[in-house]
Length: 222
Image (tube, rainbow, N blue to C red; front, top):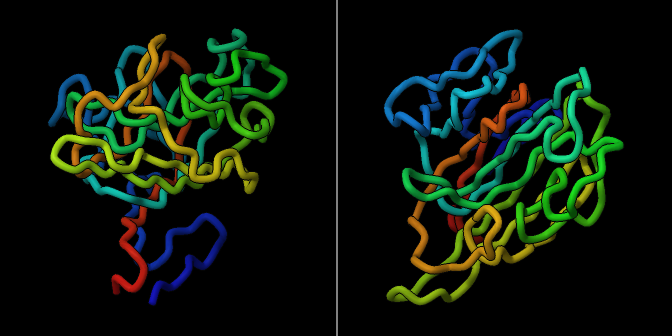
């Protein structure tokens, strides 16, 4: 039995809180693993600091349900990919990027399709643009199903379901491979069995709050 959270967006009884606004003890620097995440912490949120680098959770898991809330800067600066840019990387570990769900201020901000907010970056654009105005809090609810391998051969690709602000963006969309930049994603080597959540420093002061995860097992798994 899983007891739902008391309020919408609150973690259920089996949810693991990764960031509740009080500290960054569940996170580390990607550039210097084992060292503290160098992001700004105030007023119940964390904020990416330009040049500090990406941060990643200490905990790892396989298939999961993830809740993340984020906000692009209220003051609009730049355009296209230079406006409120960050990313939520799934199944990430040291030396392995994982699968990026794009974070971007896409409110009245055209850019290339597979780089818009909620896109599986570089692979699949979202079904719709569901972005709120800059400075407003937005939510991602994500179901990630890790790929399965058999003796080095891919059996089932990774699949992602993404809901932004209550609007479906992807429904069990199969990824072409882990995220690359300006190249075609492929499954060249088996994924790690487990991975964590990675948040991207792309040079913009994007904020995050209320981040939790549930590790998913099969039906009737207890």
